[in-house]
Length: 113
Image 1 (cartoon, rainbow, N blue to C red):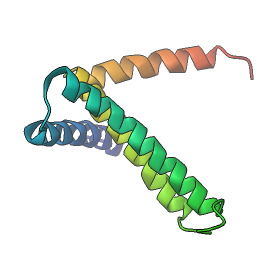
Image 2: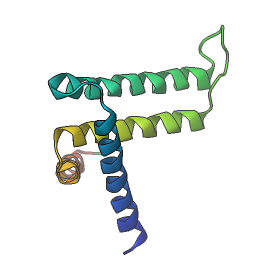
Image 3: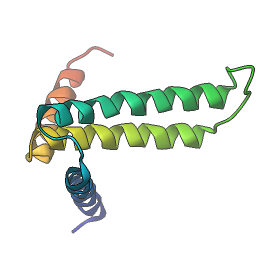
Image 4: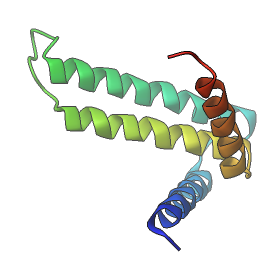
């Protein structure tokens, strides 16, 4: 297996493992649990905003509190949280995401530069 395929397989295995662990420890189930999993995305996006503000020193009271590497890590958390949320909706996470990615790629390739 080449490195790219191994990395892709590792990503989807990790998403599935995270989902299983979260499901096993989830105190709220059903529709409410699903909605809470989706809301986790907002929390993670807020952490990106906090890191950007901290990396740019935009809060005069706090100054520079984060690095751009912190922003990168928070963006990765957003991506993983979104994939786990998608896994919560469907066990066909990889296929759903890859179909969507193909549509986005096709649509973006038709746009004028």
